[in-house]
Image (cartoon, rainbow, N blue to C red; front, side, top):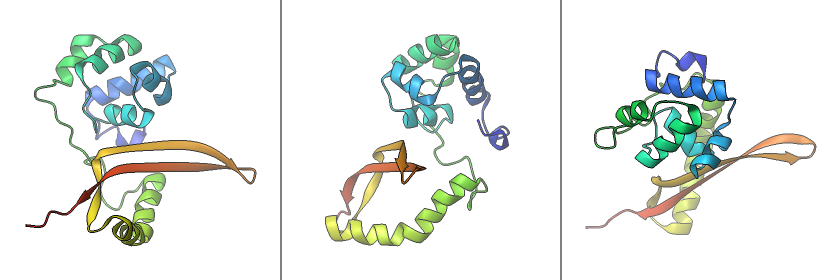
Length: 157
């Protein structure tokens, strides 16, 4: 957990991060136990994704957190994530700022290429997956991020 976010995170998120640290688990390891991707698991910890009750049962067992606490906190009927509400723009964190910078510099070029290949539309961030890989290239460690979203054409009426 990023210490600068501690004031912005709920007690639920803090409890999840503390349990993860105590168990010495990675998001990938938790995701494997839940049958979910590590990026989605991290989004749950930051309350940016909505888990199902079955995910919470498994997570409670894995992290030794009372099942009722998780189920009540992530109530499937009333809990909906406040997605994107954790930082201001531009972001101050250097890594997040670089992702923001990538969109500032390459956003319109990517949009132009998507429009050329698919037409007038967008890439969904709802029907979406993200993957982070560690890649060795030219004796350097590199980060490879893959974003995959459903193409949605703009409706004409």
